[in-house]
Image (cartoon, rainbow, N blue to C red; front, side, top):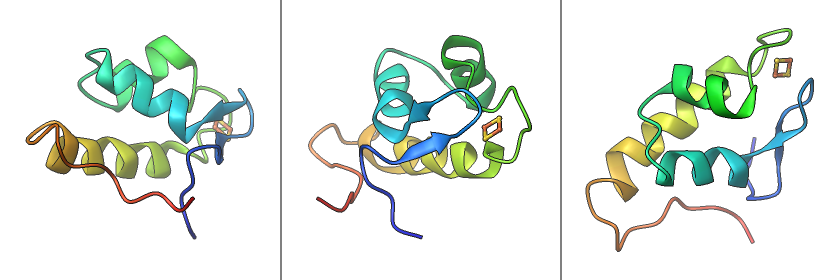
Length: 74
Ligand code: FES
């Protein structure tokens, strides 16, 4: 499944991939932080694995080298 910035990751709480990245850029360290500040993943929890993947992608790319970006489709 392709990830786009506007992709609605959490259907229960209407949280997009871009919103999750925004909270990571603001200093969130893990999925629990994302859940705390966006409420993503706090409903049915079906999206938690996808949030984990976004956090992992962020931690392994953008955070280590701010020049890098997660490969989103346009
Ligand atoms: S889809 Fe994210 S909590 Fe249900």
